[in-house]
Amino acid sequence: AGTEADVTVHGDRPGPIIHREIYGQFAEMLGRGIYGGIWVGENSSIPNIHGYRKDVVEALKAIKVPVIRWPGGCFADQYDWRDGIGPRDKRPARLNASWGGEESNQFGTHEFMDFAELIGAKTYLSINVGTGSPREMSQWIEYITADGHTSLAQERRANGRDKPWKIDYVGIGNEMWGCGGSMRPEFYADVYRQYATFLHSPNDTPIERIASGANADDVGWTDKVMSIAGSQIDGISLHYYTIPTGEWTHKGSATHFDEAEWMSTLQGAMHMDELIAKHSAVMDKYDPKKRVALVVDEWGNWMDQEPGSNDPALYQQNSLRDAVSAAITLDIFHAHADRVRMANIAQMVNVLQAMILTDKSKMVLTPTYDVFDMYKVFQGATYLPVDVQGPVYRYGNASVPGVHATAGRDASGVVHVALVNLDPHQADTVRVRLSGIKGTSVQGRVLTAPAMTSINTFDQPHVVEPKVFDGAKFGDGVLTVALPSKSVVVLDIR
Ligand code: AHR
Image 1 (tube, rainbow, N blue to C red):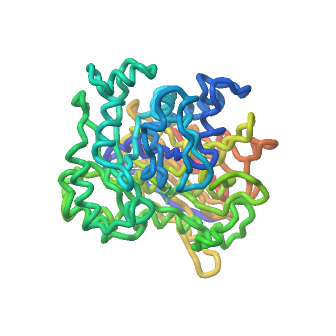
Image 2: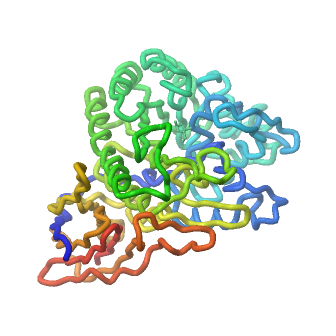
Image 3: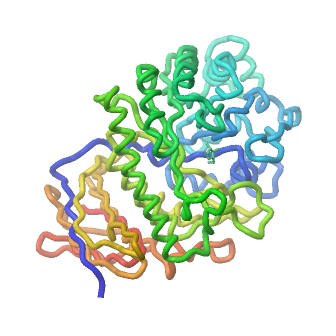
């Protein structure tokens, strides 16, 4: 039994570079995303490197995180950067008005910039526009990046950092239509122009300016902001979350779900393609050469918080369903690599569709982490277009393509092909035609699990993890792949 699909990989029609930054992450001052998840402090009994959890640092290095967005999210538009510098025991605790509880400010600018350096990631700072000022922004940037003898550079040195750090991206506000200030796009676009005017890098090292973009389908926002401020924008963001039930009041469980919610989640992931196409088409009106990037700096599955726990905000488990939907989304980003040049999954540790979950000294890697690990071969590769002729997976009145695919050629000439089987029941025989690709040998990895609800827990951390895949064979110039149901396979073809 099983279905059949035909996939053609067009090695003879290479597309744009798949920017490494689409594998970016988002880490907000929220729940246990930072405290307990990344930062435990130097005096913790949890093994750490200058306060950063050693296990988490090593896991993040292994997936080559290219860029981290911080400190928010909604948190960013209430953040005073001065609260998070200087001796830690002197830093003020503040209310975390966005997410509840108190913010101790033990993790601030130095801790973030050093963390990015430690794991080898670029930096993406979200600037406070909602309650801040252009002066606060420019002083923060000077504090971080100035090399001379200004009082801000000297203050940084007095706080322990001699050399300036590099800021790669600055986000000018977050969700300015909502938690960032409930602005109309016309008003925000003018505010953006004001901030962009005062955004200088003292070292003349370019900082890319990212405008706060639309919520999901709101192309009107993109249109207005691009028309008023487009010439001063390097990237405009898009935020889109998949909520299995479609309702914010009851989003659906991360672990106890039926096939209807498996389907609705995968449909939600597929919707990203249409969203990017629509926003990109609007951007084309003002920027036909695609100078301005579409930056999907918040995306992922947003489910109900794990029940029965006292965990703070937005802690959710992560199942095989998250892995499959992450793979679909990354495939879609590849296909739009000409416009989508950065993306940041929400979020890195212990929050929403996280890579990593921690509980005191314990850590577990999620199925979403596994996909980021398997897909890291696509970072910086040249996109190769794919055609998929395959089965349709149906449940009730809903349907999605049964097989999803992407491909890229890396700098050493190896072609990588990812195949996703969305059907939780049917295995698929996929015939992969490699057009303009001279490959004779194949190896790969597969991610699947006994159930669509399979998860990794602190006690059973290896239920969902990548395994060596031996289901791909060359014969008569065609690669035949035995793709298990509900799986993600990544092949390396030489
Ligand atoms: O990622 C959680 C929140 O979702 C962010 O703070 C906000 O920007 C979005 O609404």
